Length: 243
Length: 319
Image 1 (tube, helix red, strand yellow):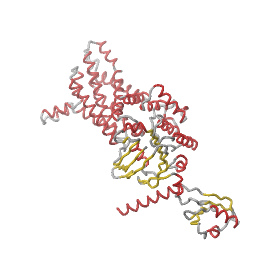
Image 2 (cartoon, helix red, strand yellow):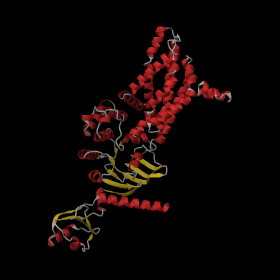
Image 3 (cartoon, rainbow over the protein chains, first blue to last red):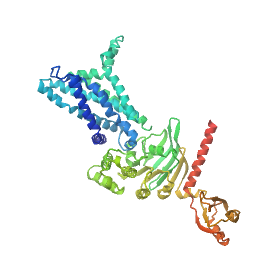
């Protein structure tokens, strides 16, 4: 437990001693600004809510999160520090969780810096703050889902570019399988298959959370999803560490 | 005590370590010698718990690495090949991280870090990021993290690779000082290092042990053991003067030096006294004359090349 904290601390500090954290945060804020105000027509639609802001998050995360996740394990392999790390008296689970949590907290920091838009919408109108809070929570959980996929993909290779591309590809599947286009392609299939496909999508679960419906099943989905991918990460690391 | 029994490690079809067995006791400094790809690093990676063996057992102080990996890892200090460390951390931050993970806190942590910084002479680069350090300093940072917890077992993969002669000397004396009541295993391909710091040497190639003994013993197995080197001031027919002697097995001319010769004795015989006497009575134009110590390098080449020949012969047969 302690060791997980030390790994977490080291990892988080390294995000902030390199430009990575700052570049990530600035780009994240600029992009969410563009999406919200320009493409989402925040002012023009004249409604006091943040749905244009949150609606773009899955697509923003699709490229931003793999960029943080790609280095998680690939860099350790590349610099050889994985050998150092794995010969220290630390459990593999502590390493996987510590590193993951550090990246997740970085996402949380970036997300929390968008809070001025929450103030703005309160200044302009009278939004349902409960819904906005739920949406923030859902957005962070969704970021965690993307990140867990990224952790596993990063463990697969020593090349972080490959890890990035693999992560984007797999994340895209988990986002897109909830869109109308994909689901319409399965009209021939029995309803339970369509539901299963839609049920795997981040969009489905995120949409319901961001509408303010804090269903335990949606939260559970993300938690189980994250746990499974992290478990897979640990297995992949164990298998691939020697290569 | 480290006990390794019937250790085999395969990567797909390639056998890196082949049924290796040996034990190392407290106080021993074991030098692991072998050509590149001999299985030295792989063996070390298995002992430190980074790789799991295909078959066989490794135990450190009675703890099997497969059953109690964390216990074994806390006994070991390890410098991996190339001394990897986190490039974006400063030396101090890095050592601090290692100390925390090794379970130290507060004053004890400070004391350990301070001591190791002094031991390895890192004071001047404490606040520099590891990325910006020279190769020698990086190596020393790696060494510092390995000895920080004063481990019972110290495993160093090519600890002096890339250091200048002064730094090499420093690291070797450091290893010698550390070695009391510890087990030290170092791998190297610098043979003089083995003579300088090791109390025992194992030569491996193709994942197997070819020789095991003290550096002196291995040297004495060299062809050159008991040979004498002789340099002549002017042209002189050395062959005519001594080749018929029954104790002389061969006379070699030293490469690139026309008048320097090595006289090889028949195994078990000593030539020094005899040649000394003959050269004086025969008025040889000798400018330099000395006894050649058994050359570890010579023995190393002898055993590892023979095994390479054997290996290629068997693979031809199999093919």
